[in-house]
Length: 77
Image (cartoon, rainbow, N blue to C red; front, side, top):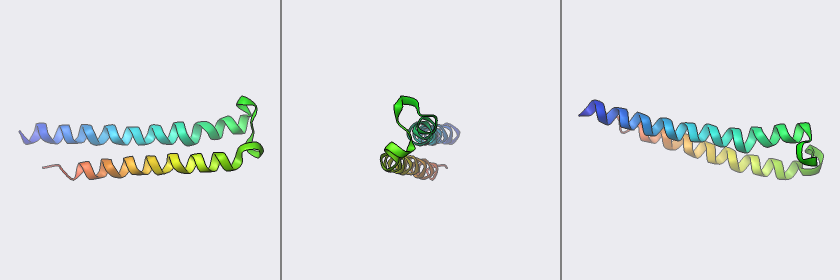
C-alpha cells in the first residue's frame, strides 16, 4: 500500500510543479516576449510598469505552487 501512496503523492507534487512552470511561462515569459517584439501594438516603454507588476504576481503564484509541491512531497512514506 505504501508504494501506491508514494506514487500518488509524487503525482500530485508533479502536477503542482508543472502548474508553477505554466504560471511562469504564461505570466512572465509570454508577456515579456510579446512586449519585446511589439505584439499587440504595445512595447516595453508603453507598459513597463504594468508588465513588471503582472510578472511579479505571476512569479509569486509560481513560487507558491512550487512550495506547495515541496510540502506535498513531505507526505512520502
